[in-house]
Length: 340
Image (cartoon, rainbow, N blue to C red):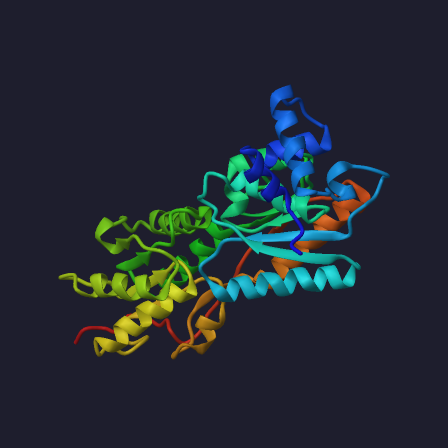
């Protein structure tokens, strides 16, 4: 027999999951008509909310949730490993679930996930962690959370954060290419739904500006964090009348696609063109030559976010944590070949 969930009650009553949560918890004002409709659905479905959702008896849940929406399978696996490590060490259980970060009903779905599973709080990975409406819903329903964000400064606020300085790391990669002698550096953007994409592009632009190199729009290609977009984007750059001598992909998967495009064009990497990525995922180490990149330890980042959440649940006050990805120089970058 299938146990009815909060989402089932919401659908049966014709209301949102957050409205059901308000009625069940009694923490917010709901119209009498809506309340009766929800309670009728609860009775008809024999829905039994857990103690956490109702706030009864002072019970504390020892299960937390990890939510994600990322096209990169390597990052998802690393995030799961990090969360599991923290939960195992601190005697908590873990529920993980993917969500569409662009879905309008994301706030309701997050609340439904937290309440129907009796979760003590949520770890939010990008780009879900960047959705203001989702954060507002968690605050309204008093669901503890720790988001992982791409930003250069501590966002502040009452909740702790794990924030990653992608901008400075992208600056370091671009600066490395400039120090090698490159002046025409192509940039393959990541998906626009990720704040990290703009942070990494800003780092690239800042390095060019500070070294007196004009930003050339023909060298900047839009795309997403996937191999195929890296391949297509690099093909466009290599077809220019004056192609770049180096390409910076917004993540390693993009850069691996660019490397494949350059190799299929008969170019030698790094002698004919240098290629760099970002994140230090297996793509960077399994490519040939291995990719210069920025080491962003996703497993450690999510483990730290999970520990922060559990500390917040158990102790109350904790401080935010910053990570700065570290430049890793490998065989895919070198000085541009001098023309005879």
